[in-house]
Length: 103
Image 1 (cartoon, helix red, strand yellow):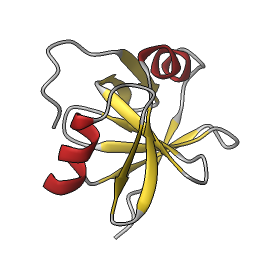
Image 2 (image 1 turned 180 degrees about the vertical axis):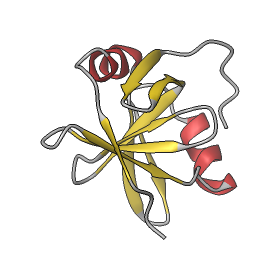
Image 3 (image 1 turned 45 degrees about the vertical axis):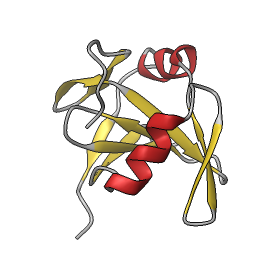
């Protein structure tokens, strides 16, 4: 998914650890983190993650062009690329239970 050589953090899931390479927040404050092949939407209140498909090529290109902490837009919607300390803080905040994937 991302062209990063090293992971930023490790997300502790009940199904095992997942290396995290990046992430973003939408305008509602919902957080998504990039694993090797999947995206994980984080729910802090319930301590769960939900697996999501990876970004499409256009959205991924916009994400890659933004620096950590900067805003980027895709399809008239604003997102903010998370910086490394934010991702590390999320990953070190404890374990998360994996919720079933939506169909």
